[in-house]
Length: 409
Ligand SMILES: *Cc1c(COP(=O)(O)O)cnc(C)c1O
Ligand SMILES: [Zn+2]
View (tube, rainbow, N blue to C red):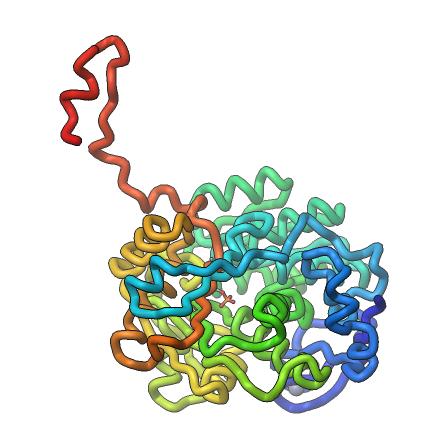
């Protein structure tokens, strides 16, 4: 199973480029480049039958992945995450067919492992020696882990108030950690500067073509897990947008390969009330989403005030008949509690937002009661234990025979 990668294509001006060197955005117009494949060729070898015998990780889709030499494919066990029925949460929301794709089970605890596993593999294959990333937290941890695995130097820049567990994880992997006064876009400025001055390879969201290739495997896997069909709707907490954009690209490729038909799920973007550039642009009928000033939310993955792939996200949402909506921080905490207490899934705050958004869309009638809806649990709640109050826990004296009976049961 070889890669059928043929070239890169600009998503805005259509210019094409060879895929044989380190490249970032389109040299002609600065927009996002996509990896393109000989899909007819890929279809002859990536068949449903052939896949049945391959291991459950994202490299099973090697034909439509960019890494050329399989020996360069780094793995920490990314991908192959479960698609779990969520009947209790579904009953509570009023959805008979609710599913949760549990991306929290990825290495480093979020779906970021997919994109960065692939981007770091490909960057190494193309000769990079230092990889660098601005991040709200999870992407930095994922990049640092794969850089360690690859033997590459890693530089990460993140807001100074990023959850300490993510900072600590990056340090543990040996990355150089830079804390920045500001948000991910401010961190991005520093990384851009460092890349120009010191030759770091910048793997920022959609600013090189291969992270999206890792993200797209969420869409392929989902389709395969459903028996080669798409669900009615996908609810996705959105920051930089590679998740939505990557899955949308995957569906087009799978259709071109004859693996699915023209049906598409409604792509539903969920953002935080005080950081919602994509929702604002969606509501205004715009294709570009300017910087959101004073962005604030407790969900780091959604604390992204500007996205280079704004037009790709908005196109996918509109073409799919989806919607973009916001959730407050108080509501997303409630969503986290619900997923954990009804289904045993301790999800990240971003995914708590997706849970609440699903409920709101059901109440509004946007989602039908019998629709098959997939919520992406993009990350684990284990990085966010500070969001669960522990006050009032009883501390018991084991020598006290009345210790238990004094509590209300
Ligand atoms: C990065 C991140 C997101 C946002 O994903 P994008 O694909 O960048 O829009 C959502 N949830 C979590 C947990 C994340 O780490
Ligand atoms: Zn271009």
